[in-house]
Length: 244
Image 1 (spheres, helix red, strand yellow):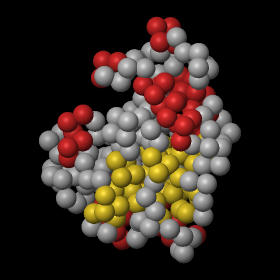
Image 2 (cartoon, rainbow, N blue to C red):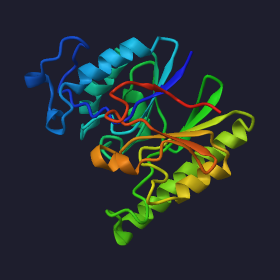
Image 3 (cartoon, one colour):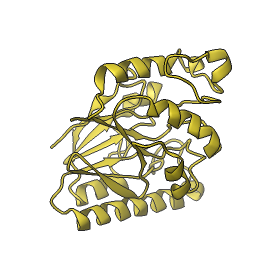
Image 4 (spheres, rainbow, N blue to C red):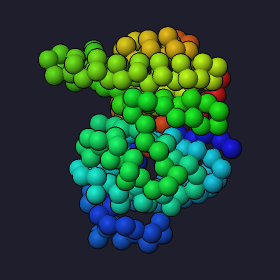
């Protein structure tokens, strides 16, 4: 029984599809080929089937689906459901369908969980999660637009970690964020400070693609193991989550 992670699946099926019977011209709303991710869903499928068993768990920290509405996202959830293992999902910046945590949870197939500002237990470890946000100092940071969201997301992460620490003070803690809690040019943030405060072992994250991955911190950093698990960074293969 192992814990894996894989972010940024960026699925966009327009109807329920079988794992092995996808017609890219008819079944996909937003092909990722323009980004060089040719039939990336097949690469994810094959690598997942080679790697993950039914007894394993896969953490998926955000940008799961391009869907704008929950009824559309159900097609992508259904595709993921056909893959082996338990799945724990949390939101990214493209989860426009996830306005209601309750409704998302009701829409998920059996064996799939949604966490956002809360936590679940996986293999006797706490897994807490929320989205995160762009960090102050990033080239895209807009003080007027981003500050409130950044601070709200930090509050949501604190809420999740406080609940986990209260309920399971002895258990190892893993965090799912979509955005990185720090980068090579932005060495700290409210998110990283919370990871340190609550003695989090590992934080898995995605969001960084292409040249932006040069900014990624991947490894032990300031007392926390940061692990970039974006699809294109890990060759579309679920990777084992680092344990303390």
